[in-house]
Amino acid sequence: MPAPDSDRPHVVLDRVSMAFESRPVLDAIDCSFPRGRVSVLLGGSGSGKTTLLRLVAGLIRPTSGRIEIDGHDVTRLSEAEMVPVRARIGMLFQGGALLDSLTVGDNMALPLRERTRLPEERIADLVAGRLDAVGLERGVADLLPGQLSGGMLRRVALARAILLDPQILLCDEPFSGLDPISVKRIELLLSRLNRHHGITIIIVSHHIASTVRLADRVLLLLPGRAVAGAPGDLCASDDREIAGFFDEDLDESLEPGEVGAHMGRLPDGGDGRRDRVGD
Amino acid sequence: MPVVDAIRELGFRVLEVVAHLGRLLLFLFSILRASLLPPWRPRRWLEEIWGQGVLSLVIICVSGLAVGMVLGLQGYNTLVRFGAEGSLGAVVGLSLIRELGPVLAGLLVTGRAGSATAAEIASMVASEQIDGLRMMSIDPVNMVVGPKALALTLVMPALSTLFILFGIAGSWLVGVGLMGLDGGVFFSSLNSAVRFEDDVLGSLLKGLIFGALIGLIATFRGYHARPNAAGVSAATTSTVVVTSVAILIVDYFVTALWGFQI
Image (cartoon, rainbow over the protein chains, first blue to last red):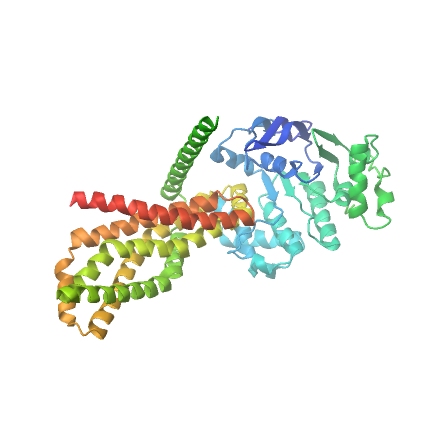
């Protein structure tokens, strides 16, 4: 496979439509996700955000249209053909998707045991290293997923998602149901992964405040259309539907006094990227 | 036109059933392929065989004993009218070995292990654990579905045999212990009536086929459940209903075909 072109979008959706039975969810969506940037998918309930993320992961096939990853069409690949593609993708599921019957350590070791020939000592080291990277102690490895809090579960799932050093990280509602401290912690981890490792991150979120803090680019799925842009631009948009979406949700998700700090006054890091969480 | 609408609806339903059977067949092939091709998971298979067997053990033993006691009581009271109470062992033994053992054990395993299997896999679908495995390029059919289907197929003949043994023990308790029938007469009639290659092998074959049916339908329903609580519930219920009916229908054909062969 040729080396990826860094100027080229990492993921491209070309007129992608998706319908479940006869119910259309996405209609001829055109969008792209830049390499090494954080993109956030926003939209109301049922707007197709999670469906779009699952399409990129290859978990479902579009009704029509084309999906490219690294310039390669992955739309109609079989499960076996998706193996090398998925090796470059990590996914953080909303509920963690950890196997209930396995301990945290075994859950994390699972992809290493299945996909590599590493000795058990090396696997144990890697698991401990990733747990440490997400701020969890080594002892957590012996617990069952049911014994973890929501925030810990999400961090373990994140640790597993990044275990095989993915180039793309897909996150489905990483902040939902978490307390503010856990939200900040997950934000920080995602931000670090993006900045230090150059991972392309695509997040589905309802959490506008986190989106504004974290995203380089927002794709807003509105009824009948998709709008993409920098979060600041969308916040300041003249389009009432777009700006209204941010208004309503910002009121609910930002701490008091935080709204004014974000709406249209986002600091720019000089290279077109804003200062973000953890900077 | 109501008649045209009714015919159209009927055609639609028939096509739906055919498509469903096609999907079931494809799922069976995917289980066979995933079980035959590496990675093999002997440890997972043994764990599942152990788990599924243990899950149904108590109800199989208790139900077998109860059914045998009822058969013993009814059989004795009927046979005694014709002075043929000495044939109780043969009547009960043949009833249990040929029909009641495999069928009732199949229905009990469906209600216990089959529904549990469907619910477990459907829950894994709802909580995205199946998708999580796919994202790690681990085939869920190889890791989760195959071992469960295989375990149900293999434990059914054993559980059916256990049901029959406890049933015979129950009828012995009633016939010999309560009604005063001679124990030697009971086992002598049983021994002379039951033929290994005909009755016992047929019974084991039925157990194997019913086990495969339970394994296939339970895993199929669980794997294709809608990813929510209602989907888990629907998968569990439909597993019990569809498998129970399928066992009763397939039982007729197996009996007919096995009878012709002998």
